[in-house]
Image 1 (cartoon, one colour):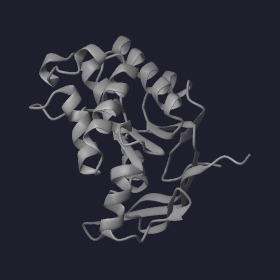
Image 2 (image 1 turned 180 degrees about the vertical axis):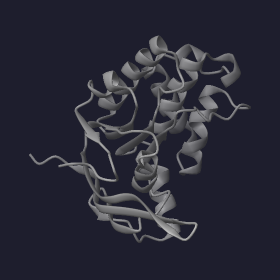
Image 3 (image 1 turned 45 degrees about the horizontal axis):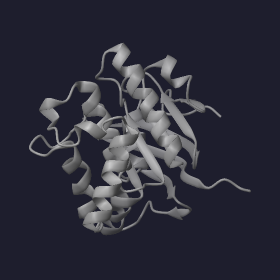
Length: 226
């Protein structure tokens, strides 16, 4: 049985104009992620990893190339269509959790579902299921300020998956944590991704964590060598 390709980036280039000069950030990058596959993206600071992730997440358009998500070319999709796809088809986890401080862990997972039009009872069931999956069932009514850094990031992971995306994009998801907490959160991240059977592209500087993923891509000088 053929695996489902949840993300394909074809010959992606990205240039910026600065001070009358053209900066070439990405120079024909090709990436393919299958459902159920966890892929690490490594590279030196400033090499374009975050730019590539933003293009994959439809937050930024490439200068040239194609973005294909779930088998559909979406590079030139309307802003409305891109927003709708980000809302339900793509999950995001960032280095900083970005939880809403005035809402509980449970409420932080309910809000994205309400925005996507989910039934309230189903949304609560899904939120509690994910909080249990990341080991925080007993912390559902706690506010972010009442949670440790690792717990906050686990809530952020659950939030990134709450609308059942086929693709998860993570930018240094454990980069703001101490080494011990980072390893614990990473294990939970991988376990949660695998249990939901989605594809994931994870930007990291941590070579040890990258080695535990299914594949490692190296971005250097704007390209990923074949």
